[in-house]
Image 1: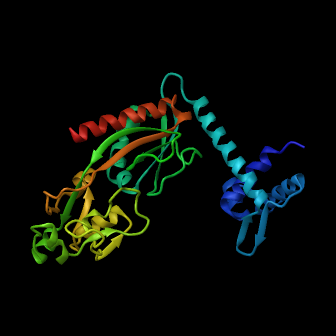
Image 2 (image 1 turned 45 degrees about the vertical axis):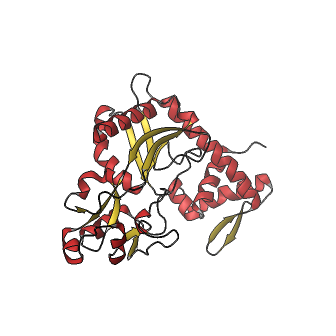
Image 3 (image 1 turned 45 degrees about the horizontal axis):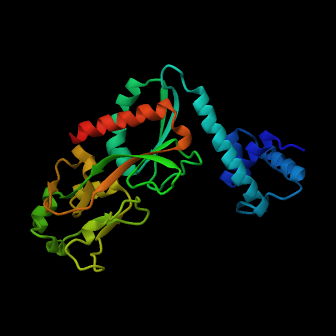
Amino acid sequence: MPLDWDKLRVFHAVAEAGSFTHAGETLALSQSAVSRQIQALEEALSVPLFHRHARGLILTEAGETLNRTVREVFAKLAMTEALLTEGRERPAGRLKITTTTGFGGSWLAPRLHRFLEAYPEINVSVVLDDADLDLAMREADVAIRMHAPRQPDLIQRHLATFGWKVVGSPDYLKRMGMPQRPEDLDAHRLIVWGDYRPPVEEINWLAEIGRKMGQGRRGSVEVNSLNGMLRAVQSGLGIAAMPDYMGPELDGLVAVLPELKAPKINAYFVYPEEMRASKRVSVFRDFLVTELTQAQG
């Protein structure tokens, strides 16, 4: 018998949520209604799809196989729906953008109003995540990444190259002294990236500079948030390297060792092949290029 689309939709929601209750909240169905749909699907397929235990649900091997296919099908349907409903004359519809928490909060968010003023029929959803979302599986439509894409099936465009600024608060540098050379950083408190850092090459380069290979400094404080690092520096906690795209947010801080040779951050605009013809993607790409050219000009 053919598979029921409604039951597959419920199955996918349960597989992603890990419980009947959470899936029901997403689908606006009762827990019992969700449970009945799953039971009916299992009976139709004559295989169990979930292991049920006190802490939730775990997909069986058959459930994993079915969910991989269902996830791909629904992702393709969502992409097709978006392309079909896009306005013929003006870009319209939903555009889901993902980028790092630092770039998204410091650079992108303050500029989005200009994009929406130019294209009011586009509804923007921004997902800030320091991990790479899967664009092929439609976790987002487009991404701005601080590294070259690793998936060969994604279209990429190099957007910009950013540098770093090593900064400290006036109060901290008055108390602890201004470093005159990289080796002087040994006597200072460094604020560095901790676990769950963005995939940016040499992101903790400040801990290595002026030291022998493999003998980097330990940070006095590890933070997994660019905004958290900024607030720590502003409070007088220590010195940190901050991306220069933060611009005015670094006002009031003092540049430390400005002559240091720091690595570069390369930003890329990335999207799947299926979105190549999307007007929403093309106008957002052009918007980014214009804004970055003006900012760096």
